[in-house]
Length: 335
Image 1: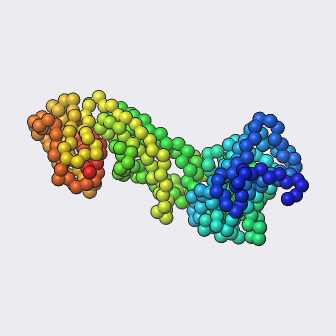
Image 2 (image 1 turned 90 degrees about the vertical axis):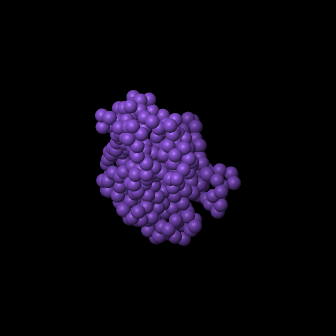
């Protein structure tokens, strides 16, 4: 090792095994890298050309690759606790088994800020196939994530926000992306228990974008109770990824609920004023009505219980219409 080199690695973690996350932690005390000095953290090397401050930072690495098109990153991704900016050389040493389908001679450095938006590879990185490393020298600005991928690949559609809120008797969903490549559409998925999901609808994506894009969807008149939502982000080639799950509890002025959910045999309908109802339907996933009752039927329904024993296992939609024409709908699961 060169006398100017500094190796900062966890004990017991080496390039041969990578059985643990390697990390460098620095405190508020001065940690400056002099020009031409190389700091190596578990096969990630930084060689600045001017004094660089690494105070109050932490570098971790993961073997979980970043998804991308047509290939994802190598199985070596670094994360910095605080964004780093410096001028100089950045180098990653990798194992053959970490290429993750990437052509070694096409490898390029790929970095992202704290928003996880990866810059398109510059095709200015250099690969050393003998020493198994890829490196590039340039100005690095606000770097929070570091990895490598094949030239021509785009790392992923980035969802920066996904929120839901109640709006009168509806649930409003809103989300935004900061980067899209080869994106096709967003499928809005819904659940009453956070486990079994159905599709509410789709929203077409912009497809290709390097600026923030915003999207919205309204779930109209869901019934009172717990509601869970997530997005399935689908690319043009059919591959997809899920967003985080969002939960909201709805309390309608017109109170109606049903239980248990999931249900095996008898579904109980709790409604504050049955006289306000016009009709109720249960619809299967194919759109076929499997149960229907008008106002008179509902007012005389014994103990407000519906027999669903003969329904096939699956997800169903309950549609309840008020006398003023307002439709309330929700889902239940038949076990």
